[in-house]
Image (cartoon, rainbow, N blue to C red; front, side, top):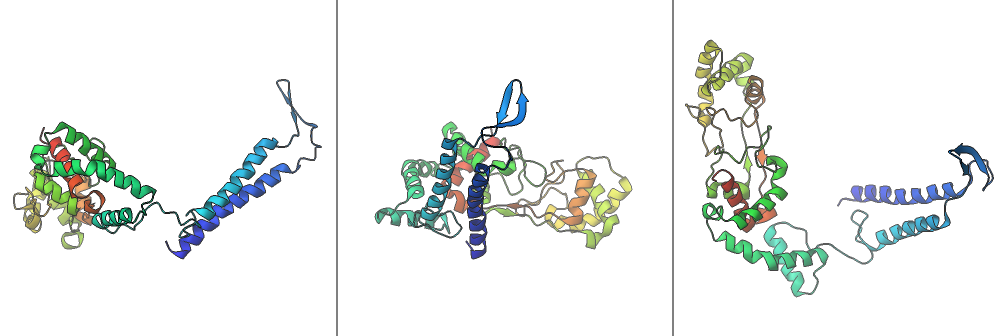
Amino acid sequence: MSMFWTIWISVITLGLIIGCYFLLRWCLSNQTGVPEGESMGHEFDGIEELNNQLPRWWTIMFYITIIWGFLYLALYPGLGAYEGLLGWKSSNQNIQSLEESMQARIDAKEQGKLVEYDRELDYAADKFDPIFEAYAQVPVEELAKDAEANKVGQRLFLQNCSQCHGSDARGQNGGFPNLTDDDWLYGGSGDKIVETLINGRRAAMPAWLDAMGEDGINEVVNYVLSLSGRDVDPQLAKAGKTRFAACAACHGMDGKGNQMLGAPNLTDNIWLYGGSHRAVTETLTYGRNGVMPAFEKTLGKDKIHVVAAYVYSLSND
């Protein structure tokens, strides 16, 4: 962590604790102009308000929490890059890759230097790694039929993938595909799903405004919508068909797409960013650059294998 953020965090954290101390001192002083123990002149439902100090036990507890806050921040890391007097760490390594993380944990275990987080990881690895290794030996298409493996894959999916694709894996508008149908940008075989999860994907739909102009884009939009049986202006669609030659390099002359490039099928009325005239116009005007992150460092190949089997099962029941 940089020095700037260390100072930023330290000033705010310590400032709040010190602020609590002065707020407590202010509350303990009599600022009302009414002698302690006397009436404040307020009465409701037969209950009269008196000018009393904060309860002594409450005040003492507040002082204890303030002192504890300072002691904790002195002993443990909590102020940016400051490591604390005890040198406690939740982990023994800065993770560069999953393999390096595992090796660092093994080294720390041999040296008797495992800390809390690493002990938990070590326990989980001893218990669950053999299970994932066994699953990894089964082809994705076959593993997808294993109910227990799918339960594990579903939990991993919910933890890592549902934020974009939804808990039901049906995706959402804005570049997050539905994983429960049989429409795949890069291929829906077990190997292709694993490849997508390991390496991630980066879309490269260029913007066409400069090349086609607004009128040209309107023509192509009409032609593209006609491919899926939509009602369009036939004259504009005819002109758009000629211009579509520039798009055919990726989507094919028939508009059925190319899974090697991740170019979607334009004839099936399934739209990643919306299929309205306005949405398709926006796509052609500005382009699309969606990103599917790589999960190799996050999950490792064995767990990815299980997630891929679960995803495969969603569209191959």
